[in-house]
Image (tube, rainbow, N blue to C red; front, top):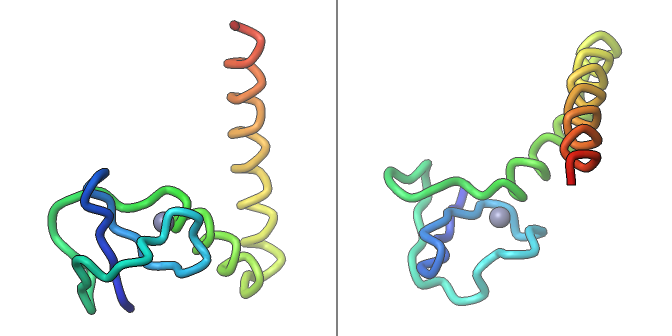
Length: 80
Ligand SMILES: [Zn+2]
C-alpha cells in the first residue's frame, strides 16, 4: 500500500479517493509509515470498503457502533 504525507498537516494518506490526498508526491512510503498522523478520512474510506466484505453479523456490529457514534454527535449538537 502506498502512503503519501501531507507536509502541512503531517498526515499520511493511503486512499486516492480521499479529499485530502496530496497531489504532489512529496513524501511517499510503500509501507505503513512511522511518525505523523493517519488520515481520518482514509480510515473512513477503509471502513466503507470493508463493509462490503463483511458478514451479516459483522455488519450488525458495525451498525451498532455507528448508532452509538450518531447518538454522541446528536448529544454534542444539542449542547451548542
Ligand atoms: Zn486521507
